[in-house]
Length: 163
Image (cartoon, rainbow, N blue to C red; front, side):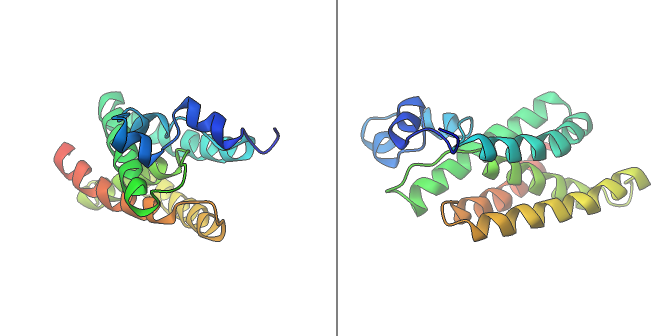
């Protein structure tokens, strides 16, 4: 159990399962899979990154915008995962976190002229964290890399509408 629960347990708890979403109308799985993790290490890495970036972004945008962006990018990424990998289970918040990071990048680009030195100084290390996280995800065969890229791209339109 150190590495994580068995796949049937994840499915019972709400992992992304394209067949159940499509044929049994279990659309709630598009959100619940972002709340599940494949193990202790998966959870710890996502929690660490979310604590570092999420708190700052919540303070910048406010709780409501933060939750809206997180939920939309999370559900969108789950939907993209259903399209790109329909025969596999999917769990984890990595895509939603990358969606949040992408939204932050768009927000910084839109407000670059008025960005404070403190905001810019936090942006550069966060870019490094995102690059390292993506490299680690691409090197891991069990990560749905297409979802990470699609979530990061989709967040730009969400942020554009909210800002």
